[in-house]
Image (cartoon, rainbow, N blue to C red; front, side, top):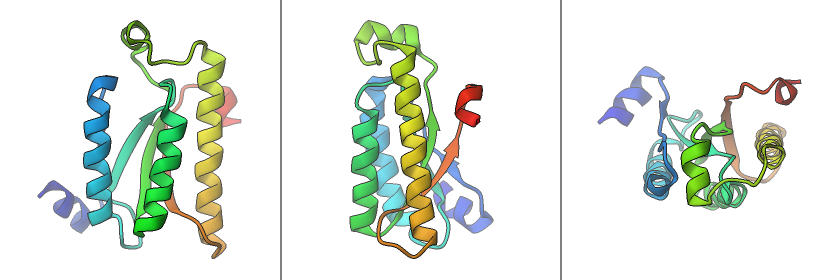
Length: 140
């Protein structure tokens, strides 16, 4: 099993679905694998959230709540998204780049807050994040 080997080697596994029609299945698989492999001191399985998609903020909240209730680390690679032309045809993206930036920055803040709360011993979901961006403003 790839996840078992990755766990044994201390290497993360990052799951991703490039186009939104495939993402519900990949998110479901990621959640099941996280429940199994992300229960120790560090995360093995990372999901991916593309924040240019409408509904990503709600998906993040649901995932954090499930992690809290189920006792695993929610691990996520956070990206803005790279398939704007294809996804725009499906009507699944935010209406403007500024809305995507707001969603990305808010998700970053929410995840970093969850990590900080856990490190301070406060109640809440356990989380870890890999931030992926080309946006300088988000890095500052």
